[in-house]
Amino acid sequence: MKISVILPVKNQTKKLMKNLTESIIPYFDGCGVDYDVLICSDASNEEQQSSLVSLLAELNNKKIVLLPYSDTKGKGWAVKKSIEATPEDSDYVLFMDADLSTDLKAFDEIKPLLGQYDCFSASRHSKQSVITEKQTLVRRITSWGSRTIIKNKFHLKGLTDTQCGYKAFRTNIAKEMVKHQIIPGFAFDVEYIYFCFLNGFKIKEIPVRWQNDPDSTVSPLKASWTFYKDLRKIKKNRQNYILDEETKKRLTNAD
Image 1 (cartoon, helix red, strand yellow):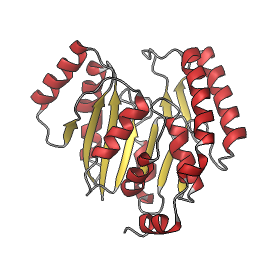
Image 2 (cartoon, helix red, strand yellow):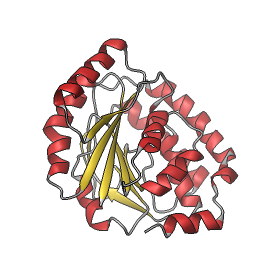
Image 3 (cartoon, helix red, strand yellow):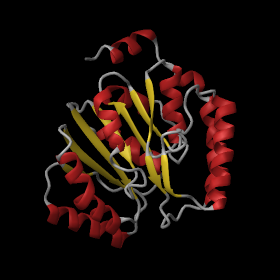
Image 4 (tube, helix red, strand yellow):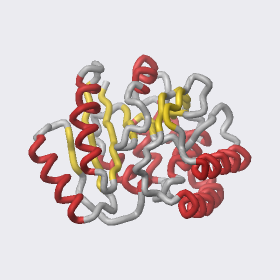
């Protein structure tokens, strides 16, 4: 079993390198699966990008690949680009935030279930989840608003949190999924889950240990306005996400 770990990053070079060397590499070295790491830097400034290139060169770890830099379409675009670059021998792609807001040990929940589900989606709102540092009040309000709209608009039964930045998909399904992706920004998580839901792929929600990143530079109000507009685009694009039966059969019988 091989896992491709995807890390989208924007101007977080110092934090990324610390987490990569002290947490991510040691964790996956010890978890008993083959893996590689794909890093996609999007919208980083020149100083941060140059530093990232130099530090990864010094690290000289063959499991880590830095994708060519492009500027700038958003986190969803960075994840899409990474999935497209994922090697064919990868069984699952797993993307997470470079700040490790979601505890790496969420993979401990996924590992014994690999092969049984097509998608694993982390939830901060599961009864078993633990939040060690809450978001600001404004972020909690906008998050509640987003969850309410998603629940009423998309009817994703059994899912409590589409926006936690920790998800895994079978690689062959992920590669097909991004062919249909139209959202480059934060609403791409909803688009991915909606794609899987519409096509009947097996989704497993997992509880996580999560903490807010106080260094986040995302404006919650501005991001929310774009997010809501993108939700409308996703809903309007519904028919284009639905695969024909032959393609679904090919993807689910790939093993």
